[in-house]
Length: 167
Image 1: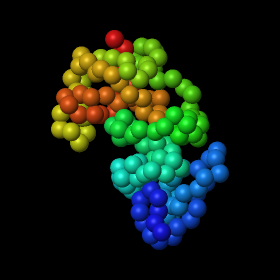
Image 2: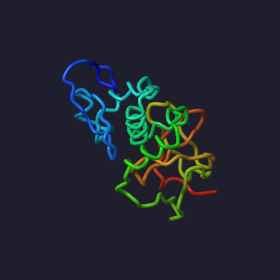
Image 3: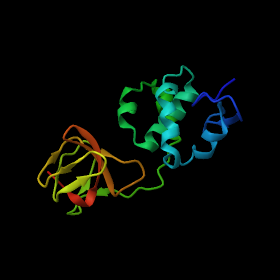
């Protein structure tokens, strides 16, 4: 028997996938960061494999964790039956209902286009996102109203929402 999420065979325990009675087996490492997956993002690379599980409870947990991690590319690939998707979303209670706002206070939504209002050095990518650059089809960062995600120069980057304005 192995962890349904990462495949580890040691320290397994049952984890209830609320609000249903279904359980999955998870290891100690997954159990330590399942509530706050951003504390150990590298561990959750295992979701690239487990998201393809045929078990609905594993699919639900993969969806919830990928959502919390802001892994939109993987979520776009993940197909869930309607009832499984409803179950997955039911367990994703957002504690933060504050809307994401741009530099002018305008509320931003996923799919909007924005313009960068200040040159921004992009850490780890080796370029600067120039003032006036248009970022189309933005994504919201789960549980963080101060950041958005968008593609600039072919790279998906996080942008502080105070440095953009809605077009």
